[in-house]
Amino acid sequence: MKLAAWNVNSLKVRLPQLLDFLAMRQPDVVCLQETKLENHNFPKAEIEAVGYQVAFSGQKTYNGVAILSKKPLVDVQAGIPGFEDEQKRVLAATVNDTRIVCIYIPNGQSVDSDKFQYKLKWLTALTGWLKDELTRHPRLALLGDYNIAPEDRDVHDPVAWKDQVLCSEPERDAFRKLIALGLKDSFRLFEQPEESYSWWDYRMMGFRRNHGLRIDHILLSEALATHCTESLIDRDMRKLERPSDHAPVIATLTD
DNA sequence: ATGGCGCCACATTGGCGA
Image 1 (cartoon, helix red, strand yellow):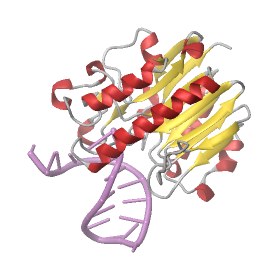
Image 2 (cartoon, rainbow, N blue to C red):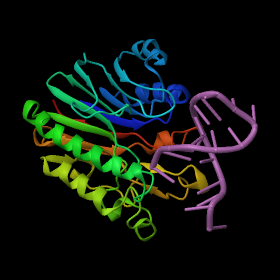
Image 3 (cartoon, rainbow, N blue to C red):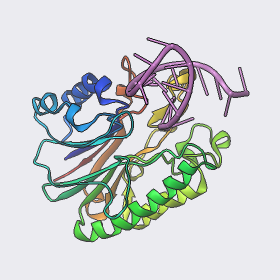
Image 4 (cartoon, helix red, strand yellow):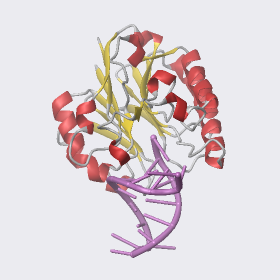
């Protein structure tokens, strides 16, 4: 089973690239973030036409998440239970016996902003819910845009980014609390190229200069991690015309 | 250096992302 996560930065604009990605990589499950579409505008027919079922939770302009799957999606759940949130950032569904949790963690803007406090509260709520979810679903994958670079090696310029949003200690501590639930960062299960990133600023030729951060992740529960054979960042999608600023991340599991 | 790019909307400028 091949799992993927991709922040598309507007599915309306990026639908052709998504269809190319599906055709080229043939993922079994894809978690999308920043669809930026209300549900009635979701391109359901176009995606179903190429062999995927879809579940989505969107809103106008900002946020929005979706799960695509070749196999049926069951027990679909939007949002974190018990956590009031207008922003559409979480979607969970079961595929076969695997629980797929698609997340778009808040950006936080800057460490001294209200949005940063929202990010930390959000992460606490997510972690509390996942602890329960893991007892119900030992086979669980947590995929998406985390807006956290877990370590300095995930940052092109750790000195410039030190204590800045996406790299600060409170955010990295929240990431470690997710790991402490028994989740593995699939990317780090394998030897990887130096300076591997999943997001590059559109500005100042960020991609060409590889000025990036690794903030998109696929975390796997122990039961899934032992079956993971590959995990990579698909930089090819970032090279296309009108790319998303994020590259897809992919993890492959044996059945 | 608070610039730069890309997307969106009560749009032709401002908010937001990361």
